[in-house]
Amino acid sequence: MTGSPSPSPAAAPAPGPGSSSGAAGPPTGGPRRLVSRAAAGAALLLVGALTVSVSPATAAPEGAATDPLARYHRQHLDWKSCVLGPDDETGKELRKAGARCADVTVPLDYAEPDGRTLTVAISRIRATDAGRRVGALLLNGGGPGGQTIGDPPWVRTSMKQVGERYDVVGVDPRFVGRSSPLDCQWPTGSFARGAGTDRSGFDRMVALAKDLAARCRTNRGDLLPYASTRNTARDMDVVRAALGERRISYLGYSYGTYLGQVYATMFPGRTDRVVLDGVVAPDRYNPRLLRGTERANRRALEGWADWAAARDGTYGLGRTRAEVLAVLDGVRAAAGRTPLLIGDHRVDEHVLPVVVFSGLSQDNDAAYADLAQALRDMRRAADGHPVTPSPGFADTLSFLLDGSASAYGSAQAAILCGDVAAPRSPDVYWRDVERARAQDPLFGPVTQNIGPCAFWDPPRERPTKIRDDLPALLVNATGDPRTVHANALTVRRMWPSSRLVTLRDADQHAVYGVFGSACVDTRVNSYLATGHLPPTDVTCDRDSK
Image 1 (cartoon, helix red, strand yellow):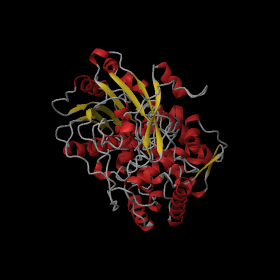
Image 2 (cartoon, helix red, strand yellow):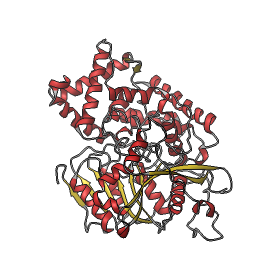
Image 3 (cartoon, rainbow, N blue to C red):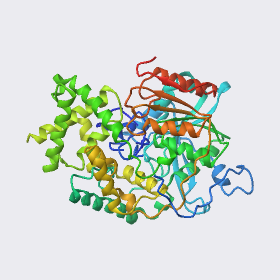
Image 4 (cartoon, rainbow, N blue to C red):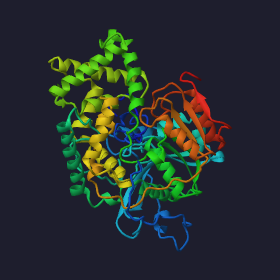
């Protein structure tokens, strides 16, 4: 999944496979900006990692002489301005909200804590109600690969008065954002592509996936073995200790929900209040996170087509759902014959489905308008007209078709491939694509397509066997097209002491503080304020207050 919105999907700068985190659009933060971008990492089954586990960094008391991580746990943090320069809008937002930033030192390899180190960048807005302070609330906006350091201001606002009782802490995971980077020098920000319409098109995607993997091995082979969710969880525990907290509360979106599950499993007793929004089921977590989302994405597409049809006077895409979808089918066929020239970019049969897919994670007018404008631009190009893309569409094309977001896609792939092994035979993916194409010719070739993990070295550790139970608050929309509602039901059954808040009749990925449901936001804030889960599961209607 990912993984943070300016809730428009085809626009730039929400959690995700993905991110939600989430990643088929420009990443610039947590769910306020990136959740809607998660095509690969909101994008974001366990096919088996057969390597021997490295022993985890367990929870020895930080002051104990036997603690091999004592120097990390007891490190002094140098809090400073978050503004990196005159063009740093994220830093300016953090400064305006009263946040300060610091770099936390962590070992590259937890099996050799005296060896090479990395930095993990964090931001913090401190609690103002010291007398009723709960503790630190750590955030992860999804992806994997999504930045979270810029999220404390909007999360603090969403928390309303309860935010005064928490230190709200954004953490850019290892190799992400302002932390020590892992950039493979990719020509794209996402490995997500459609498989094409025939075997020759699929073979081109095999070659692309192989090339992306080779670039990572060549350019960052020294870091790849240490990119994993388990190491990110270990880093989180170092952050916890460096902040002086015995336990942390946690808010994770999309892929961040899986990270929260791994952390709670590896470090039992270290969590207080846990909110997981856009839930990834651990038995479904692997490099092919998008498999099984075809039906939810088709429903979301139909909902968007109804919206566009009601605004035919604005977008001219048709007056009925069928007419709007027919326009999309015609444009898709045209791109399959000859790539569409959109500004300086060419949109072909591999890119067009990802543009549509990335437009369907946020259920709101702004996101729907971006997708409608993108389709309008593509139809004009298919008709032979010169096209300057709308701003949101231009950002998405840049994300997908140049190297400006290489670091995002590189880190996302490194984490997914470093967590769970993927099938290595292209024929496995081709058979899956062909089966899925018969059910959904637009989305099936995206969700089942091959990626660089097919050509990655095996993970160093086995996947985490997630704990049997945790009293957490789970949040999911029924129509979530990235982390489908069934995932949340799975984790709810795994964790009988948890509770599930469901937003009904919304095709929305990431709900709390993002969608604008007072019903959902109130339940989450009540839990964060009191530590008491609702007595039963809760269902919120789309328009409920």
